[in-house]
Length: 107
Length: 116
Image 1 (cartoon, chains in turn blue, green):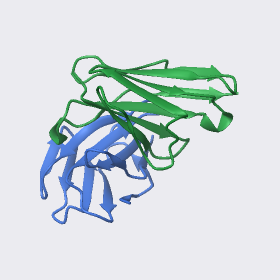
Image 2 (image 1 turned 180 degrees about the vertical axis):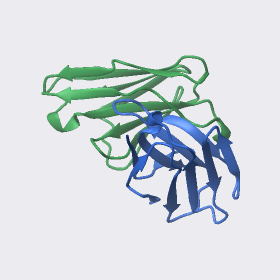
Image 3 (image 1 turned 120 degrees about the horizontal axis):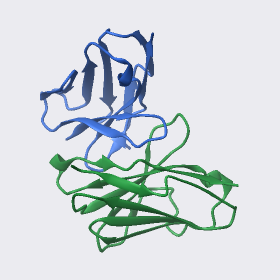
């Protein structure tokens, strides 16, 4: 079956730093979605990507759909405390979720 | 827009009893709803996909007789965990889609089930 690997698994950064995480797949995806999940809550959709090569921004967040359709990255610029959480990539209509990247901001 | 609610947000039940969880799309019609399970510090695992008015499609390894799904209307889907056991304790999350890949999936806030 399809597998999505996210890296890094966890990140410890200082407020104001930029963040970059990526997601790779063993097979081609037609859609990439990035979600953020806070503890005890459901995931919230951040960015949706629908075409290979597409680069989309949402405020301080930028994500790209890889040309090979097997990878995607998410960048967060100038991180703030509320960016803390777990970020998941997911692909296709019947979502396959990545393993998650836990972001922690060091005061 | 695209708000999905779940009820209850948490529930504790005794082993052997059944629990029903509701998922509602509040401001759009959800042609498809999905049910996920998430164990602590793990990713979301899809349990089943349901389309309004038809039987749910279950993922491999998910017992359809144990996890009963009903998608009676375009705004409501229910998941019933029958004869719950402690190993069913988990975070159950639904999502809803208005149809078509570009709509995306919007998630409910989740329901934490604890079976004692």
